[in-house]
Length: 431
Image (cartoon, rainbow, N blue to C red; front, side):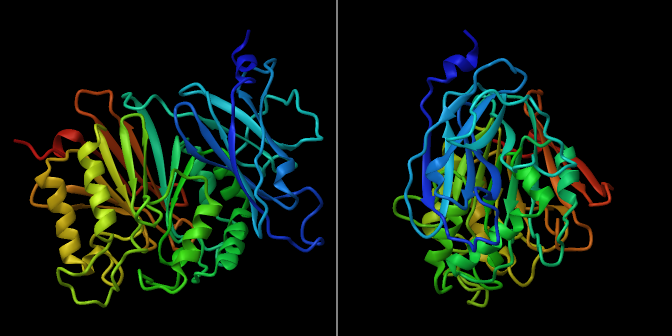
């Protein structure tokens, strides 16, 4: 019996909430409001998000191993909650590690099997109905190996309607993609407006192509959280939190006792800590003293405990705010919070920490003195809102005697102004 004949018996779970009604003239009948998005992926599970103009209870996810054209595809059922917006998150379980699957979203009254072993062309629009894609599962947790992460932030569909750098990013064949905020420039906490902005950004063809084929992990920054340079005092931030959780397929956000969009996940033996620098943040203009917070005490304690528990070779911290580059809206205005972060890493002898950020509409590498080992920061910003249309890639190789990460800054014209490698041996507190 082939693998996917067995897989047809696998149970698959879904989270669904309902759909905002569009004018009939805006979308053809039975069209999706967004091409599918590959979200959180582990070695054995994968989440796929989409939104529909119709009741999403009629949607199913069909998937099978790529290259096994004769195999019977697995299907998943849907549990539906109907409200004022509608989306579905399919969570396929029982998958094989490091394996590529083709998928498509279909309606229950459409033919289920077979579907072609088609290649996903990064230079073309999605398939004619905009419903298909592929994903590759993660390696087993803790397994050493090689993979590439793409990092981006700051995209403005109003200013940059084509956003061709997404094609260039796909050509780098990243295993996963981190979005570090300013994904949309909504500048509001209004939930319906945030939904509208995200759907418009996902209508950008090359962005949609990336999302339907590459596991994407999102974090907000000020413009997709609230107004410019907004902080924990933003009115309506609970509505922003609700919207963000609705429009992405991510690991559980925040904790039972502490709201926010912070979360962690692992890919092989690299662990990622996605940090919410907005929901609990003190105002930028507050006195720069020991009462001023970037993450809030609860999120900070969550981070430190997670770093202490982590057995990953590299620990990657990711947030929209830069450590030093921005003098208007970053950690540079939060000396106590920044020094407390450095101190927690060094005092607890946590090796292999890196920091990723965005915000400043430029991409480059900075190395910071921390009182211990130099902390590498990769700033990746302005992929579709800035002069260079740039992004970064981090290629990890943890199977070598001295595990390394190669960082490349890539401009939209294909040039690579920075290409540097960093070894774990240089990211060690020592005895």
